[in-house]
Image 1 (spheres, rainbow, N blue to C red):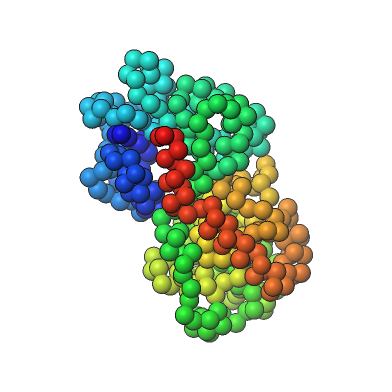
Image 2: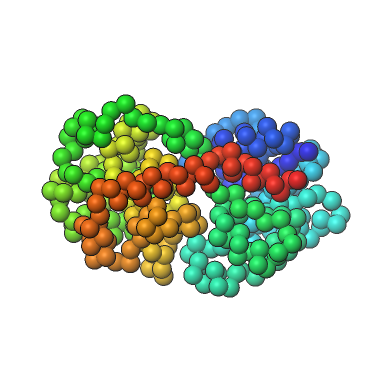
Length: 358
């Protein structure tokens, strides 16, 4: 079986997925329509190899047309294309399946993150039409998979259980130093330590809520470790209990920062960053999805009082945090790690993806 997968780019967190899937299907090529330089400017750490091929394309007004010459030259059996209604060539390939005879799997979130509350009640008709003409669908999470299965019960719609390269190593990691030893090393004296690890690029991270939290909690009791840079990053220098490490690419240092932390805190736009935090055994603190707070699809991995603390307001956040015991934080963290172990390993994601090829 020969498979071609189309993506905008291949960030570092997808590398293991493609390499492991390639070993299962025999022949697999990944095509990208964004140049490597363009992807790097977006902040992605991207890989270049012989199995990642640039495909000619034209973008106008947000709509994409890509060349199909390479896709047909190599005579692939299956095309994994993006579940994106603005990809005009994908529509063409879906409507002409009876001519070219290739199996088409669509890969995407299956819902708009910005219109989530609307589309979870009334799915986008354009995506519905694309899925109707496809042979199968890869969605990121079980929540969206269950939603589309109600509409297309007989179609192969798979929840990949989206995860990232390196998650298995994090699950098996245990520090040789204790939390207190690491806090002494970094001169962190506050009893409870929050950690934030995400780029400050999206306007939907709700940095304002992060700042409000820092200002509202007792600075002698609560510390905040910050990992990440970006255009929307605020100045934390006025806060003695905020430890800003910027962008961290040293794995050993990142392991230490997560080990000495107690709770992962990201107010909005949570995505794969929470999978990393849960793999380290950290419960997730975030805000409930609403018209004011957007959350990515990985938000459905969170269950209040099982592996996370989900709040509606700063006032509720403060009350819940102040009432949390050390044992409760540990329980939530252990559940978070177990959830990743059970559902979000890379081998599980590859196994799920392969179901559409059978």
